[in-house]
Amino acid sequence: QLQASGGGLVQAGGSLRLSCAASGRAFSNYAMGWFRQAPGKEREFVAAISWNGGSTYYADSVKGRFTISRDNAKNTVYLQMNSLKPEDTAAYYCAARRRYTSSSYYYTGSYEYDYWGQGTQVTVSS
Image (spheres, rainbow, N blue to C red):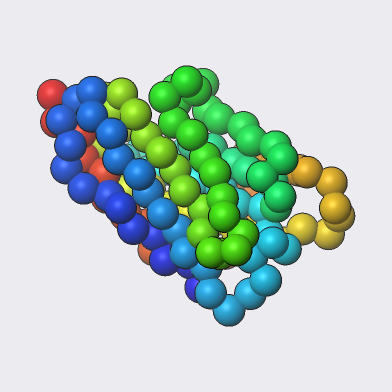
């Protein structure tokens, strides 16, 4: 089970940190990702991290502003969001993908993930 939290209302230029806590599975067996979905739009990739944190990848729209990280001891993945823009407004979802290798892979397609959290709303006012 994945539980996302940390969303809220923030002014443009502000920051938020999202958290996604995992339970019931060996967290280090999973690569993690963040996706978002704005009203009337398709779900889009935001950021991904390998099982050991050794590799990360970002959508161009958030590169340099967002940082994904994880703490396997706490079974939690984070998304630090800085310099927020109104176009970042969306429901943010964390996702987990079972790994089958020790390599530091990340995944950017929503179809590649096995489990999803319930979403946390981020609203950025102008």
